[in-house]
Amino acid sequence: MYIQLFFNLFLGSSVFFIFLTSNWLLLWVWLECVTLSLVILLQRLNSGPRNVEAVSKYFVLQAVAGVIILFGVLLRWGGSGVLFVWGDYSFLCYGLILFGLLVKLAVFPNPFWFVDVVSGLSLGRSVYVVVVSKLGPLYLYFTLSEGAQSIGLLLIGLFSAFLGSALGTNQFSVRKIVALSSIANLGWFIVCLPFLGGHLGVICFVGYIVSILVLLWVTSFYCYDYLLKGGHVYYNSSGIILLIVSLLSLGGLPPFVGFFVKWQLFQGLVSANLFWVCGVLIASSLLSLYFYLNISFSCWSLNWVDSRSSVLYYHVVGSVKAVLWVCLLVFFGLIGGFFIGPVDSLLG
Image 1: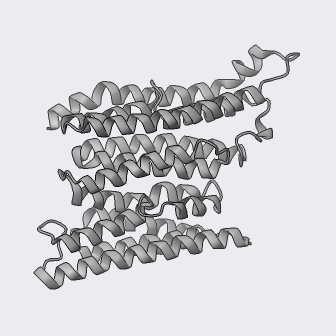
Image 2 (image 1 turned 180 degrees about the vertical axis):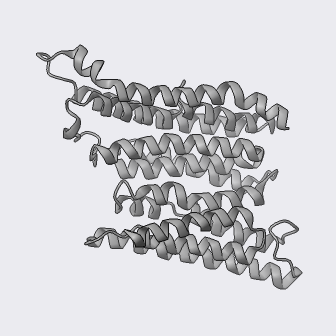
């Protein structure tokens, strides 16, 4: 217990110092401290071979990405003697650092290792990999790519968004759906973050975190492994409603928070006149929304209460917590829709 508390504090402080540091060597150290903390925290007592395999793959890929970033940093230091994040980069140094960050984010060139890692972890510990491990690399990516219109980054983001949506069409494993949703949504951020201001990027990422945390919490609390085998919630309509709402929010259905996150991301692309990129992202979003709706309908129909029972009791009176969570997601969505635009105009 005390070991987990210590490494959680160490993990939080490492992520915090990433946002405060502008020296590349110190940033690399803090990124590796995050990896070290997560390797410890992802382990379980009496863990089986599947968990060990997942943690080992995560460690190896993060170590490879860290070596690539360090190589790019040292090349830049040897060529120009500069270690600060801001400044001029040669094409080789810039490409190596961005490539290492994209590997850490699991969007390029091979995102399948991320699906395998999440599949081998418990749903509760998946939060570390899906959310916490992305904070530092995504911040550094935004810092390096702000204002840049690179066709390579656009294609990488579109590839990730479309791949995550397409591969999720036949999935009913919760862990694989979470991993593929993370890949697809990070593809959106890879495409759109260079065209957003810092405050809008933070707000959009917080909206994504809210949606994914609700899905992880409800599936972990009700012991979901496969969405069509949720026997624990046969008479628990609150669990079903929470699951459906979290899925639809990730798919971008209004009026949930996921819709307004994607709305703001679209505004950044429209302001840069990248309408063809918007078309590809809309197609991938419709594809993901299709299988989210399919899963939602299947879960609701398979867990419908017995016709001899009181439908009003099980699905209205027994859904107070679910209604509160739905109102929370809708509230965040409305806040995003009505206040993000004015805040952007004031701060811009």
